[in-house]
Image (cartoon, rainbow, N blue to C red; front, side, top):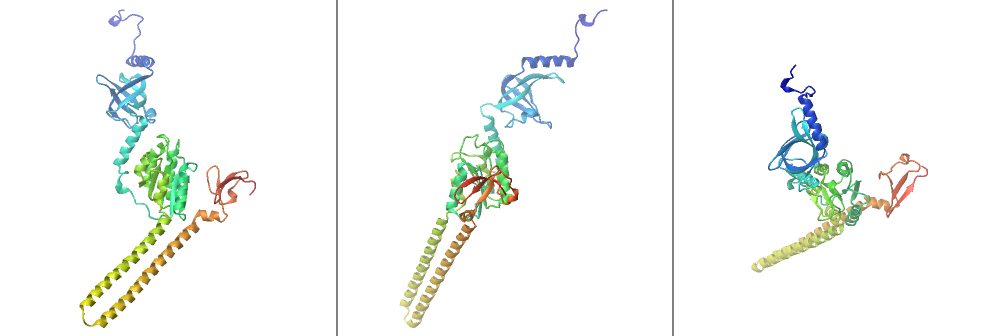
Length: 403
């Protein structure tokens, strides 16, 4: 029997699928890891979430796929025209016999992935209007309560508390401790802003930390933090790093402070400055009234010089003017004195409500060392548990022996 096409007796006949499989295995063995530089084109994402695109240069192109399990780790979004360096393996799509590059990792060429992700996020949030000046709110002139979102162990909290207490001793301070860098910092900060809006009831919130590298400040470039600040019902001041540092939270916040110290000075006026302003205003008002009285007297005297009759009427009018002037000056002085008394009374009431005033009377605040929870009921304590007591000056760490 003659074999077709002169096929040798011992030859193996492959199906198309078997051939494509052998080609794929050979390619994957020979090109199990390659680095390819090229320009992305025909980028598309079907409902499966996989990335399909082509990598090309001036002379050639190759089909590429980046499966969802790999592309979820990308910090940036690929786009047509973007120059990238891709790492992957060469294979074949057996169903069609098409050569393709299976990409496992990818970096922008010339611009770091982290910086590119930051620029893309800025563009997206700006397009949504989150940076627009029209949506930024004015800070309250004299807040009764200030919320703080920062780390308890950083220099920022000490600077904030020092300035707030020295400028406005009576203002209530609500601190929501957070991690400000590292894994989990961004969702912690976003949740803290939401918690203060829901539970703390401040009139203004300061979100910030001390300076650091770009990586240290990266949590404040996170989209979750930006959207939490934008969703805040009360004005937010962003005070991240030093004056040269700039983050997305600075762009979204209602006000940006170059440092935490500047943020504290921005949200509360100095009580001493307020008192001086009242005194200056009172003096200016007295002088204005006296000038007005002097002007009216001069006008009256000028009219009197032109009138020959009746001089007695003019004298009576002058006497009446003097009487009214004295009454007006007395009334203004009384109102100024009353306003000063109200201001002093308000300052004393605010001082009485201050947590520091309570601590000055010998009380202390007990918090769990592990999470900072304030202890209000001894029944919630366990023997051997460690607490931190906050006094009017200083803190102490104690252990529960009995309850």
